Image (tube, rainbow, N blue to C red; front, side, top):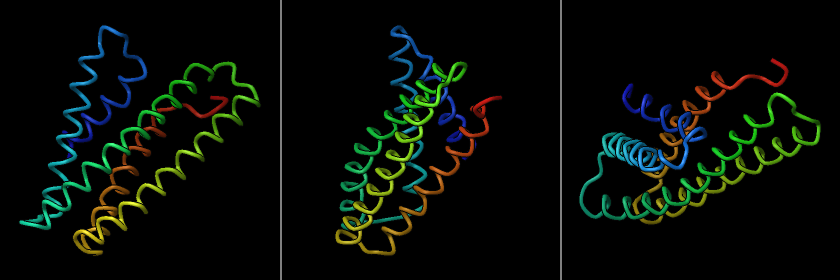
Length: 153
């Protein structure tokens, strides 16, 4: 889990500062994070046969959508970093509204895939997957909040 967390932090914190020359490195780090996350999920769920095939098909679709939301989150963090020192009330409102929207989109995505996985495999597996996703997202959020300065600091 420590290597997963280290890879995650590197991806999250390096991406906002990555220049064009480092895009291939960032792609490599994202692939590493993705592979590590997949391995953790595989180890956690321990699926076999038809259930495994059905689950991984849904997992891949989920990850494609989740990565789009992660890109939006990274862009939001970049905007916050750019605006932090001179943040206006209007900028704070815009950043918070975008944050609320992203949280809502992540929740909707989890609900959508809970239903899909429940139909393809079973509700217990779907719930276990969503539980793991929430755990990972919470760990990421905790690390981000621990690293990003509060407004006015």
